[in-house]
Image (cartoon, rainbow, N blue to C red; front, side, top):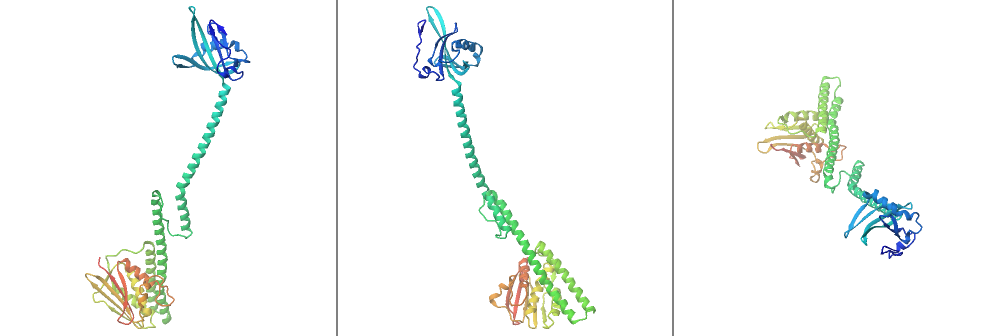
Length: 409
């Protein structure tokens, strides 16, 4: 087509503009007359294409502000959306002016593409974004799950070990936890250790209580066998032994709760307490007619709890009476520099060198008697609580000797 010396070919080099229904169309409108100057072959079949210029001009005047303006190499073009034949189009508009024979003519070149194709591309892109988002979400969810499982693995291990402790399969939590949990595991181990010690202390105290009461009960039985239970002597002995048993019960219960007491500054005379014990043991072992000898030239005193002294000496003296043939000797002495020395000797069979250290442990007996094997162990515990020590030696009387030493503060 030729108009005003402007050559407008029917076919153009861009192939889609030459194809019907390609979705890409182009028209040229004379702005002043609003007439269609040229249209691409791809507009074939589009209704109301002849009135497109009028609508484009109306669009430019009414919605010019809605258009997007681009300036490329000094040429200004506008982008927008318009309906041609009820078909939504995305268009690019370019205004050109031509001077011919002192007359100015303005033309509008419009290139448009159907919005359906773009919408289809947007839908495909949206689906792709959604798919990618879901994959990314699943990926990071998996990473988060793995991270949480890894971070909670120590707590799972801790729970399993606590269950094993509850079942009695282990005594404490293992090492190797993260620094953030070491404070917790250390505190739990200390708590478990304290609870275990408390449990052992209760068990030991109950065993010690039974062991301590055994002598007093034997004393009562011995007295009841040889005397009339209605005499005043029996009643006196009964009251004394019941009083001692009451003291023992209170002592053992107090020790079960609070453990060993600290060293007291109040001295307890050894001779008085030892005489009380020997009087009782004389009646318990009356069938042996044991001779007790107490050597105390320094009037020695024990700086500690009276209950501890009675428990300690009572066990050692009872052990000596049990194995003695006829004589038990107690020697007490004080050295101003080294401290208090006590020895208990008997004329019995003695103690074999190979088991001297073992019989100071709980449950170990020097003979095959039916005892519990805790008397010497209790004495050893009390001696150690006062920073003292005990040694077994061969006595001059022919039997065993137990040497006790309590250093000065």
